[in-house]
Amino acid sequence: MEIIQILGLSLIVLVIYFILQEQKNPVALLLVLAFSLIIFLVVVRQVALIFATLQTISMAAGVNSIYLKTVMKILGIAYLTELVAQLCRDGGSSALALKIELAAKIAILTLALPILLAIIESILQLLR
Image 1: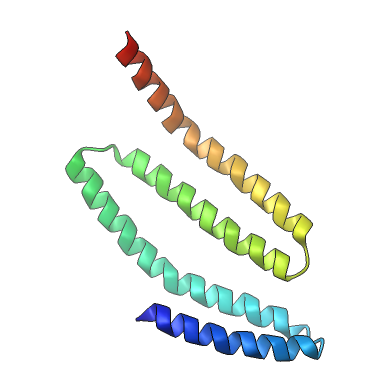
Image 2 (image 1 turned 90 degrees about the horizontal axis):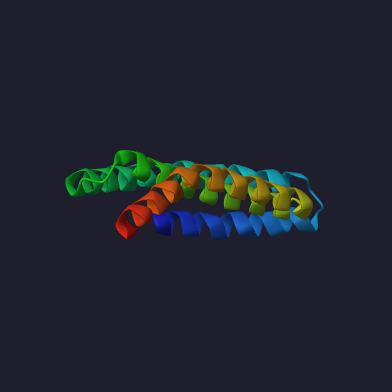
């Protein structure tokens, strides 16, 4: 299982990080950044499998694929934003993390707007 390997490597990286951090070594943050990238690349394959499965289900249910793609983009933005914001916090820049999160929220709202409009239009048609 990949998650067991990720967790095991995470513990090793954490120990090395604490040792480097005690020595005030700037490589400590780079180690965390590199390992975060590795985790991201491993997880991307699993996300692609999930997306393919959801796409198959939505096609069988007759759901417009645009809605599914939009939801998947929103989830991607949310997860990537969380990853980058946490890395910023680890690097000591909480202010930058907050600005990244604000930008992501606006991007998510922008992507979700067509779905919200479609829901409102459907409700209005039901009320007529």
